[in-house]
Amino acid sequence: MRLNIAVVLLLCCGPVAVSAQTAQQEKTINLPAGISVEAASISRTGNLIATICSDHVVRVWSARSGELLRSLDENREPPSALQFSGDGRLLGVAYEIVGYEKGVIKVFDTDSWKVQHAFADSLPMYSLTFSPDGLRLAGAGDFDTNVWELASRKKAATISPPFGSSSSISFSPDGRWLASADGDAFVRVHDANSGSMRSATKDLLLEPMTVAFSPDGNWLLTGGADKTISMIDPDNGKVLRAFPKQPGLVWSLDVSADGKQAAAVYRSAERFLDINQLALWDLAKGTAIADFQKPGVTIVGGAFVGDHYLFTAASGNELTVWSIQ
Amino acid sequence: MLTRRDILHKSVALGSVVIASHFSADAMLAAFQEKEKQLRKPTPPNPLGPFYKRLTPMKDMLCAPGDRGMPLTLSGRVFNTRGDVVPDATIEIWQTNHQGYYDLDGYRYRGKLQVNKSGGYRFESVIPGHYPDKSRICQHVHYVVVAPGLKTLVTQLYFATDPVFEGDPTKNYARDPLIETPELIRPVMLTGDPNEVHAEVQFELCLEHL
Image (cartoon, rainbow over all chains, first blue to last red; front, side, top):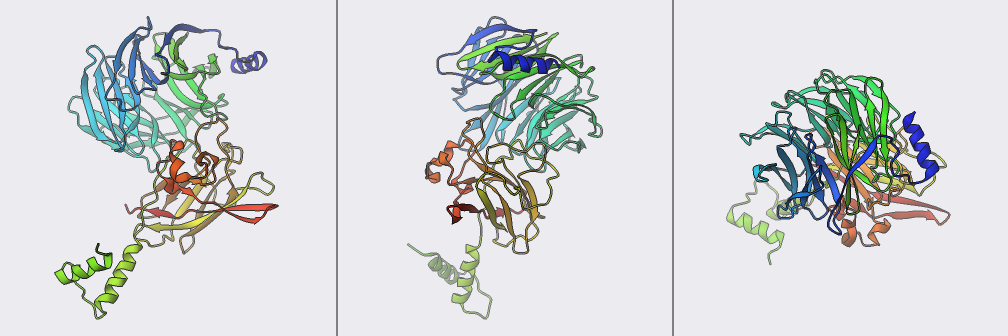
């Protein structure tokens, strides 16, 4: 209902900047002229924001002051994905090696900003995630998803859907399982060590675009082109619960540390490039408790930090940092 | 410069090709050359896209009577890289309507069929529209082709008439960031009369062996 009211308000008042009562603009970061942000990752410690910029440079900012802390210019190879580890001590960045259909992943130490690990034996990766203990890294590319052990730099598992690729991946809290939202309209859970499949949901028809494990590992949250958020049992792939009638394609999901809330970012089904709407859901009640919509911006990353959800919105050479309680 | 035929004759003379047949060397080399020609290049893959829908019904008529848009016939055959037709392939396609919208609720402009004994297929539809978001994505039809013993092909067909190419797809194909080769851009043949014009596009598909 609250979402509907927000939409009505938007229609009545034109391009109102923010429809949610609790969204607070925390910071505005101005990038160099002509440079825009294409993707971002926020550390769960709430202090760092890493951005993929249009000039192929990864810039890291202080989330608190907005100060530029570091520019990671790795020979201007285009970055294709980036993600902080859970403790914020590592930043993984996937790069495409143009002209060779190859990719490389570099893992930076966020204290020294030196490359701690590099994995060059893959195709370009478009989604990255660290295991909660920070010991493994998974990357999903056009065909395969790979899991690497950081210490040994060995590939632990390669997982491939029958066709298409995985657009989103998530480790279980104990790091044993890897869930994937696959283009052939399945959510699958694989053993992250052996690559063997634990479950595949048959209850979806359209592509899931995002997947996230609950903090206790007992359920998964997924959403996608069917404009529904579904809670899935990772043991058997069955949908336990569904929150239908989302305002758009569910583009990304994040679950709070206590498992009580989820943040959903939406992509417009009509104007596919528009990613400017977000809602915070109370999972027990199945209701949206806060929302945000701002025409003209693109929501490029977010994370639960303590008791609030921090996210970034890009527009031109400006990046704004927002929080929702 | 030596022709392929010269090289084959030289190979026979040097013993790197041995002909064990009662037919003449000329006839055997000609047959060999002919067979070589049948080797086909696999169809380039292209992303699956975010609007694939499972359990698409078996049908070759994707549009309904009275649908707006330019009527379109898509046809072709399925081969393997040896040049043999693949009679047991299944082709699934999906696309937007003429305004650039996918049907997410039902199966309009989505269909699947089993190819015939000659590896042939034919779908009736309309030319898809551009996405309404003014992105640089060209008009396209998604394909997934599955056949036993062959690698599943995920690709897309594009139209040479797309205004984005300005009449020269070979030169301008990269204007769409997803198109890596002009091979996926197919010529469009217009048939009928000006009052009832109809577009026909042929798209031959070649699958790699596992």
